[in-house]
Amino acid sequence: MKKMMMALAGVAISLGTAAAADPLHGVWQTSKDDNGNFGFIQVAPCGSQICGTLVKSFDTNGNEISSANTGRQIITETVSNGDGTYSGKVYSPDRDKTYTSKLVLSGNQLAVSGCVFGICRNGGTWVKVQ
Image (cartoon, rainbow, N blue to C red; front, side, top):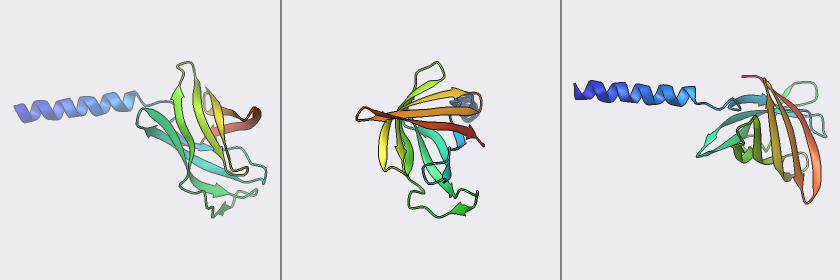
């Protein structure tokens, strides 16, 4: 009986975790960078924050390419503000800079912007692919 109760408690906890998944979690296609390349970012929890890792890169024609940044965290130190906006950091491989970011989620689209040393940049709109 005790084992059964423990198993049910485990199922309840895992269901609760799945139900509480943040809408930002998933795979996002970035906007094209200065070189015309884009990538797929896998967004997932990392501790109490949200992180996103570059999992695939593509050239301007949509052909998968090799990238030294594959596996690199692009989104770091990110938290939900509770209103569809997120604050954190976003790394831009084409400029080799990390920006203090603002992410705005609207359905399956994510508006990305950020600033570094007072210079702000619009990172375009990312689209959720998974």
